[in-house]
Image (tube, rainbow over all chains, first blue to last red; front, side, top):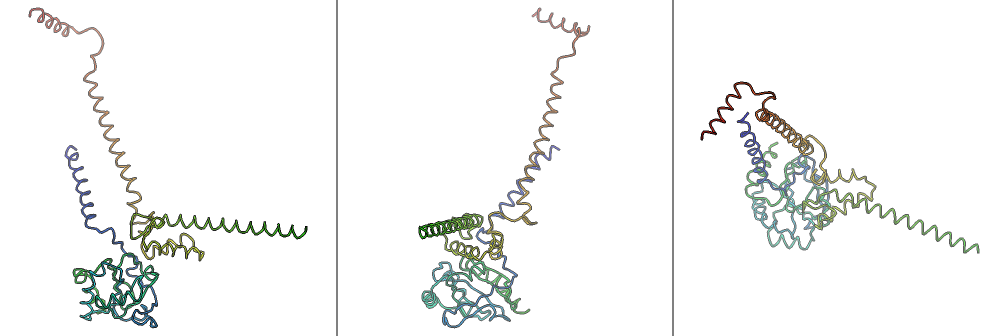
Amino acid sequence: MKALRFVLPLAIFIVLVGFLWVGLARDPHEVPSPLVDKPAPAFSLAQLDDPAKKLGPADLKGQVWLLNVWASWCVSCRVEHPLLVALAKTKLVPIIGLDYKDTNDLGRAWLVEHGDPYQVSVVDADGRVGIDWGVYGVPETFVVDKAGVIRYKQIGPITLESLQQKILPLVRELQKS
Amino acid sequence: MKHALLAAGLAAFLFAAASSHARADAAFEARLKNLEEELRCLVCQNQTLADSTAPLAEDLRREVRGLALQGKSDAEIKQYLVARYGDFVLYKPPLKSTTLLLWFGPFAFLLGGGLVWYVVLRRRGRQSENENEDDRPPAAGPPSGDQSERARALLDESKES
């Protein structure tokens, strides 16, 4: 009984430290998306290069693809952009850009300046498609499988680490199936 | 005279219609405000949708207003946002298996604390009872022969010194 008196507070303390330690490593800005493992929300948006043409998830069925949400006003997009350009050169997976709450002119100019890794970019000028996709912090990147189901969502800039450890292995696995 | 009456009646009718419309509008705005205060802005996470000036919050307010104008209920509007952003958009988390600890954890702690408090109090009470027994004066009555002899010896000792 006497031992319990010392062991019990210690045990509680250790559990508490454990919880806090895990909490430290977590980013509260990363809200898990309820859309993962759900069908990609449909849209049909005008293409940045040719506003007369439209594109939507339905046109991409049968292949694994990435949807990268970007904007010319987005600062952290500049951080991940070189990685996207490099990824596009490998031709491992098509990247579709969603130019979020941006104007066509600024968007095009930005791609000229920083390079265009996108197979196609579509323009979500009023941000409605962004809301459907649960976008709340640009950049965001979604992995969509052959059946048109969202399999992964990256919030914030892609890093070499997330690309090598999460996105590319997942893409390879989905392409095999 | 007839015309004047008619005009007055028409004016009264229009006034009533306009004010009821304004009242309905005010009720609608109050409802939106209430709803927005229960929703979280995803960008600045400790602000409600009503308080936030983030562009996304503006878009979401516009979306909420649009849905309300379509005649959607509060529950349907919340469902719409939860489907896109998860339970996190709700300031009041729903009760489900993963949130049981969140909802009832504090009560469990309160109960545990109360239990510890009770046990400690009882133990302390018992301890002081035992102590009291030691301090209690000996039972009343004349001292026994043994005791008076000891007392006398002690008194004699103090006289000698």
